[in-house]
Image (cartoon, one colour):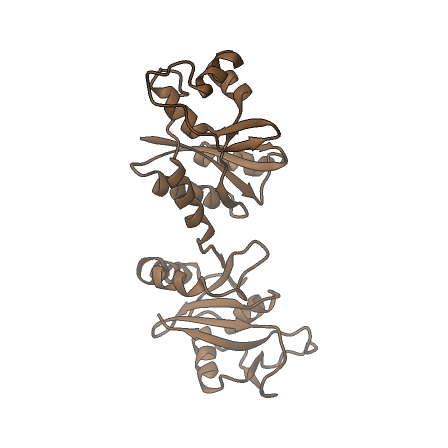
Length: 303
C-alpha cells in the first residue's frame, strides 16, 4: 500500500534548487509553499501509515540533512476546494455536506471547524467518504488518529549529525564506530540524548564528533573547539566510549593539563579519566588561550 503524506517542513524551501533536486531524485518528493508554509509531499509504501510516514521523513532528512520535518499538514478544504477536486459544482458539494444528496450512505464527515464564515473539513476524511462513490483522488491518506500519532512521533524524534576531525586516513575506523553505535547502542543512546539540550546545533541536531581511537587527539580537540556548544565525542578504544565535551565556560579547577601533540584520542581519554575536572590543551600550542583548543570533560555516557 502507498500512503500520501504532506509534511510541514523548515530548513529548505522551493527556492533551494539543490534541495528540490535531491528530494525529487532520492525520494520522488516535491517541495512547495502554500500560505507562507513550506510543504513536502511524498508517497511512501508500507503496511502502516505511522511507520511509512517516519520512514519517509527519515529518507527526506538523509537526502537534505538541513531539512526539518515538523508535522503533517492537515490539508483543510472548504466547499470550493472539494468542488474543484471532484469536478462537481459547489451547490452539489453543499448538498452532500447538508445530507441532502447521497443520504443513503454514510453521513458526510463532520467539519473540522470554520474559516471565516465557511466550514472546513479534513480532506483525508472527505476523500474517504468520496471513495464509496468513486469520486476520491485514489490516494491513501492517514486517518485523524494516525496523523496525531505521526505528529507526536515526529516531535519526539532525536536527530543526530556526525562530524569528524580534518585529519585524514581514519575513515575506516570512524565508520566502525558509527556501525557499533547504530547496531548495538542506538536505542538507549537516543533515549539518553532526548533529555539533553546543550549538545544541539542551531537546527536542533545533537552534534556527534566521531573519532577512531588511534587518530591524533589534536585534530579532534580542534574540531570540538569549533562548536559554540557542548558536543558528544563517540569513539572506540578498548571499549565503545561516549563522552560529552565542552570548549566553552570557565575553568572549574584552574588546572590546565597538557595533551602531548603526539597523543591519540585513546591516550587523551585516559588523561580525562585521571583528571576529570581539568581543562585540556594541546602541549606546545603557541596560540593565545582564546585561540587554542581548550576542552573540558562534562559527562560520560555508559554504553
